Image (cartoon, helix red, strand yellow):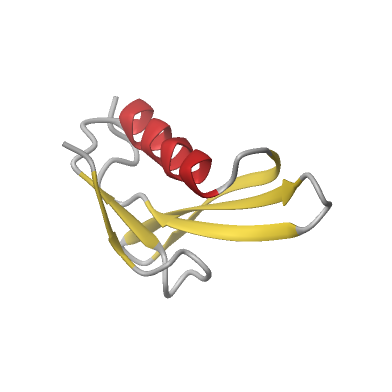
Length: 83
């Protein structure tokens, strides 16, 4: 079962931690599932993986229908690299 823990996703320090994903596919699906609960319509402008020390993060920059941009951070350490 996927759980969302940690912060609100507004920065690397406040990254949303995805817990319970068995592999990258489940983890990324969980990211987009949460985003779709928050935003009805959006465009992904950027998605990048950042690795620092012993943690991995997925940073997404999204744009809503009004042109507003939002950044959301996920802590993907638990599932990153798992097939």
